[in-house]
Length: 251
Length: 110
Image 1 (cartoon, each protein chain N blue to C red):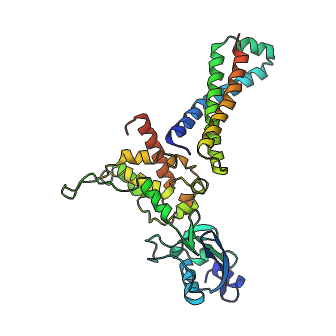
Image 2: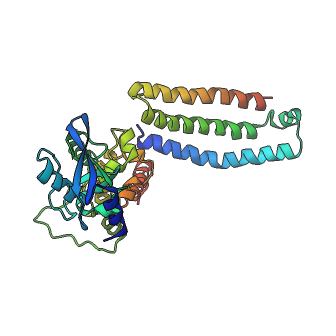
C-alpha cells in the first residue's frame, strides 16, 4: 500500500473515501457526497462506476473503452480535467477527498455528462476534416516518414478527442467562438498531410474571428493532455502558416 | 475577436516598437546624464524631421498595439461584442494617436 493510499484511508471514514459528485441537469445542480470503499488499485472511473452500480443508479456518466483509447470518460477531478479511466485515485486524492464534475467549458446534459456537440462542431469549423486529393482508383501515394511535414503531423496525431485540452483552456472559457486546442491541433496535422487537398480552405477557416490567433499560449492544453501532445505548438505552427499565406510567402 | 490581420498588425507594431523603445531609453539616459535643460532638448528636436519621424512612428505603433491588445482584454473580460468592440478599438487607437501626434508636433515643429 502506498503512502498516499494510507493517507486517504486515515482521512476518510474507515476504509472509505469521501467523493463529491456533481448532480443536476443543465445549468442547475449541486455536489452530492458519497462514501466509496477505498481499494488499493482504483481509477476515478471505478469510483464513479461503483457509485452508479452500488449507491445511486440514477447517476449519469459517459465511458466506453476503459483503457484510454476512446476519449469518452474525461471529467474534472479535484478541479483538473482528466481521463478518468487512466487516472488512479492514489495520484489525485486530496486529504481523503475527491471532487468529480463534468468537463469545464462545455454545457452539462446531466450529472457528469457534458454535451460535446460544440466541441465536435468546432472541428468541422476548423476544417479539421480530411479532404483526400486522390480517389480509390489512384495509386497509393508514398509518404516519407522522415519528411519534415510528416514528422510535424506525427507529433500531433495521437489525439483521442477526449476534450481534456478544451476543458483546460482559459481562452475557450473567455471566448466562446474560439475553436479550441483539439480542433486546431487536428487542423495542423492535416495541414502537414501531403495527401490532403484543402489547405487553402483550412488556413482560411483557422484565420477567422475564433481562429488560432486567439490562443494566448498559456499551454494548459499541453499540461493536461493525457497523451502528452502539445497543441500549443501545433497552434503556433498554424499562426506561422496563416501569416505566410496572408503575405503570399511560400513554405 | 482576433483574426489573422489584427494578429499581424499587433506583431508588426511590436516589432516596430522594440528598437524605438531602446532608442527612447538611450536618449533619456543621454539627456539626463548630460543635464540637458528643456530648452536645450527643444533646440535639438524642433525642426528635426528625424525626431519627428522617430516619435511619430513610435506613437503610431503604440496606438495600434495598445488598441488591439485592449480589444482582446475587454472582449475576454466584459460583454463588449461586435460593433461596440470595433468602436472601442478605434476609440483607443484615436485616443492614443491624437494626443501623441500633438505632443510630437509640439516638440518637433519649428
